Each structure stands twice: as structure tokens, then as C-alpha cells.
Image 1 (cartoon, rainbow, N blue to C red):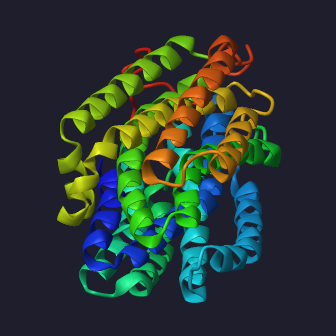
Image 2: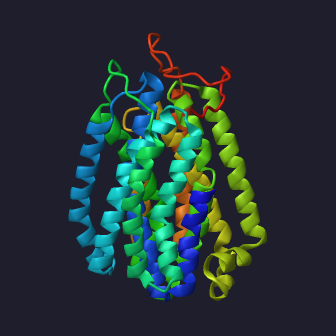
Length: 394
């Protein structure tokens, strides 16, 4: 809740302290940062799944490789994005520093998640959020503008890495545990990248095809999308170690909980869409409340996809991200050539894409959830109470 709350505060403050064009730029930078930072989530997922199956293996080498590859890719792609999306060079440079720091943090988050040390994991996630989003919030609140907020976030994100190392103390390494393969990190990162690209594609295309005022409105609407997408993220975080051991009941329970949360958010947006846009962007955007259910429903569907994609990665499925890349290509083509270039047009196309993606991914993920734990491999640790499904700390 704390992590998602801080992420929500950034665009809310941005809507009150920035012009519509700057707000659209901030939302675009956040989207690019989320897409660029998928290596962090991919690394975290890969480490967590590996440790849940095989114990406390060493993870330093794949971490360094992941960070280096991410930095190189950012150095190549961010300048192109700056030109195509009308972003300043300083802004994209600071975004790159911030993103690399977040990627490095994925190692320690994954170790705590795989070991089911959820209390320390919660603290680590809160610390990272304070660096990543807290710096932006402080920069905006103090009048630093777009560049000042990104500078503060970049500095604080680098500093919190030392705190994550301390929180992960005592994890230890089992010298006989099989090493984490780089291919596993690539698979998890590719799936996470596809997940974020398909869920952020509408925001990027709105920036490309809509005029500044309309793209600013769309940026406010995507606050609702991301709220519905990430609000139930804790369900996937807790479920992943058990999904790595092929627990089908955990998958069905996670889908039910996430689906129920999404349904409640969609209903709330239908009843109070104007209030939702007012809270997200200020009174100037309240009139756009009629679009709220479109954005909330899209986020709710992608929250289900997020669970399913994690289940496919945990089950070692081949090409788990393929359906998402196909959905993204179809959505981009539809917006470019067929969909009206309006807020409602792009948001409606995003909703249809989310629904189709959820159906296809569900059809692929649920039948594949079978026991993948080798007979000779014991869980790395047991819960303190010894009961099935209990949450352990240290």
C-alpha cells in the first residue's frame, strides 16, 4: 500500500504543479522508467523462483550482468525516445540513472521473496519506493519542476541500495545449490517487459497521437489504470514462491482475490468517476470522469494478466511473453490505422486489448500449472509454525 500510494502521489502532485504538457512528459517518463526497469522485476522473479525451488544459491553474477545490459540498452534507446516523444536530454539522463538503481535492487528483493522473508521484503519495498518515488514527490512539492523531481529521485534511489543490502543481511549462500541461470533472468525480464509494454502502450500512443491537453487528460486517466493494476500486487508477491512449486490452488486463489479487487475498483469508478479524476488530476480534470470505468477496467484486467504471466514464468513455460507481444502489435496497429484519435477511442481499444490478452493468457497458464518441483529438492526453508501456506519472517 505504501509503495503504490507513493507511486500514485507522483502524478497527482504533477497535475497540480506542472502544465498539461509537462504532466504528459512526466507520465511518459514514468512509463519509460517502468518499461526500462522491467529487468528489476525480472531479476526479482527469477531469483525468487530459483530460491524457492533450490535454496539459497549465489546471485551476484546474473545481477551484475543484468545491470550492465540494462545500462547499455538505456544508453541506446533513451536518446531515441527523447527525440520521438519530445523529452529533454537531461530528463532522460536522470531517468536512466534512476532506472539502473532500481534494476540493481531486484536482486535483494528476489532473495527475500524466494526465502519467504516477507517482513523484510515489505521493509525493502518501502525503502526502495521512498527512494524512487519519494524523491519525485519531494522535488515536485518543493517546486523543483520536472527536472528537479527526477534529480532528487535519481540521488535517493542510488543511496537506498546500501539499506537494501543491510535489510538482506543473514541470507547466506548454500554452496551446493545450483547457480541461477542467466536464461532464467532473461525469460522473466522478457515476460515483465511485455507485460508493461502492453499496459503502457496506450499512454505512449496517446502522447504521440493526441494534442497536449487531451494527452494530459489521458495521463490522468492512466493513474486509475495503474492503480487497478498494481493495487493487488501483493497477492502475486506472496503467491510466487508457491507458484514456483506448482501449487494450482494458489493460482486460482490469487486470481479470485485479484479479480474481486478489480471488480470493486471498476464499480467505484462507475459510481464516482468525476471524483476519481478530480483526486487524480485536480478539479480541471473532473469533467473527464465519464472515462474512468474504461481506465479502471483496463487496469483490473491487466492485474489478472500479471498473475497469469508470473504463473507461466514460475512453471518454466516456453515463450511466456508471446501472447503479450502479439497483443501489443495488434493494439499499436489498431490505434495507428483504425481507432479514432480521441481519449475514448484509445482507451476503448486498450480495454478490448486487455480483455483479449487476459483470455488468451488464462487459457495458456491455468492448464500448465502442475507440480514442477523435483522430488529430490526440498523447499529451502519451512515456515515457523510448520503449517502449509503460512507466511514466515526470519
